[in-house]
Length: 134
Figure (tube, one colour):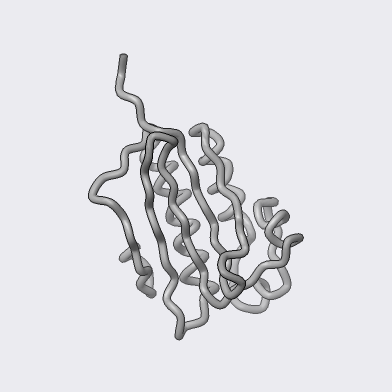
């Protein structure tokens, strides 16, 4: 979260274990964080929260000041889709969220978009719980 030109406020436990390809998972996380940095208005700080439980590990990335309609949330994961506001706000190709979802599903998880508190958009990456070798 420290990479890039904008800070992200992170809340996370000391440890959260998941099983998977480190490079692919890093790509998914970086895409979610980069989108939050790119689209949040400069006076608002993006936030990331990691939680881990017996059900798995989740990463919620909140982009304050950005509200997506229900239609935009459902289309956000289509390759090359960019909503009108996104096209005006920042350059991009519309593949980051699609890649994040593909990586999550490859690892048995998923990524979804939610409306946040009405003044933001939250993308949640969920991965299954880590299980040691039997």
